[in-house]
Image 1 (cartoon, rainbow, N blue to C red):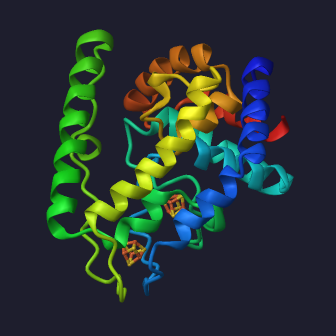
Image 2: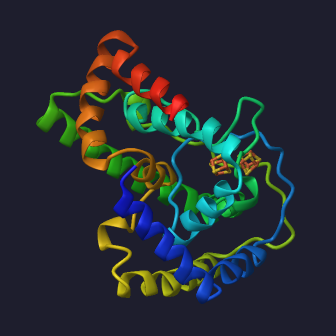
Length: 245
Ligand code: SF4
Ligand code: SF4
């Protein structure tokens, strides 16, 4: 873990507390209609987009639960290194199909069942285009061929979620805007950069658990090992170390 990064997180949490950002975040979450969900977990198949304030909220939750961190960190590490070569479920989902951070899960997870078919289709289209771009980059720069089943993976549309009051697109946009307003304070304080804007839940944590530069170098090696052998000894070593950290 980088001390400077941890300091940045601590400063950010302090700023959030001084400005009641966490209370504000829960008020936003409270505006989402609680529906009936079958808990099939079909939507828990990726590292979901997470706003910085949401990440800080999750860090605060995990700080109080060392045992949960110990359980989660090896899963997060595994997901980060293999996410582009094999389709894995969200590392925050346990074997019993329960979200280990359910009380503090990000906005994206809370609104998934609210999507209309059109919104769902558009989202898949965007994700697919992004993945095709990543596939090209990996092929041209690293001679790595990302598997089709990962690049084209499609989370099925949720037909089962039942809710009295569905969240409309403009309401979701207002929620995102309210979160951005809070985040602008971190930008102004030099605690957040533009490149952080599209960060997924796993990446936020990888920056916290591992050295970012070393991790991205190792990622290429591990991906190649995995694609060749369906296994990576380098990754096994990192995971073993993380259990003892
Ligand atoms: S929101 Fe839909 S897809 Fe996700 S767990 Fe609930 S029922 Fe399954
Ligand atoms: S954070 Fe929780 S609810 Fe969201 S995708 Fe992961 S397991 Fe599912």
